[in-house]
Length: 260
Image (cartoon, rainbow, N blue to C red; front, top):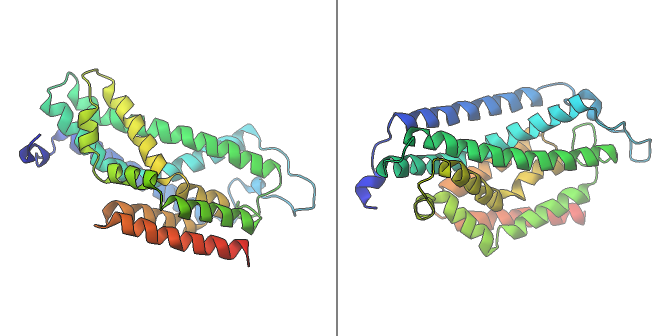
């Protein structure tokens, strides 16, 4: 694939897909900002009693669905920026190979990403529900024990130094070669490639995006810090250095919480 193909201008399908991604990202961030501005946590009955008091009532189905929507919106908003470059690559591949239904390729790819991230949000929702029912969440929906937050920070910081993290990060920054090498001619290839791309993104950031679980999904400082770190690793020229420095900071912060 020569340079002229890589520099090919985006066609209408790609423009529509990117506009949809931008719109959805804005909606998610607006929804999260609105939730964080509420005077009480949402849902209101999620706050638990003191550690030694009676356990809270289990979440009802409506509350559980609201929590699931909250985590889904959070993860979509955080990780969609990592899909924009891959959507552009999918559009180029489909149009250059003149695949049947190539106009749907970026849409199917984005759908595959959303399905994978929604599945991850479902897992986190179950974990969140377990913590709630055990009385381990405070009024801000954060885990009561600072040591739990410290453990997550140390684990996330250590992950920043691993070769697996760096390999996933390099793929997220330049997904075109891998997508091109693994592409077939089936109509649903874009869907499966989207799910695989989302899995790699999660492999890069899965411990980082668990930080709002420990610090509270309604904590704007934690959500903003996670979002900034994800964007910095995607956009900075020396992403490996940025990841390692962020890892050192998380290990230091987590150690402080573990040994105050």
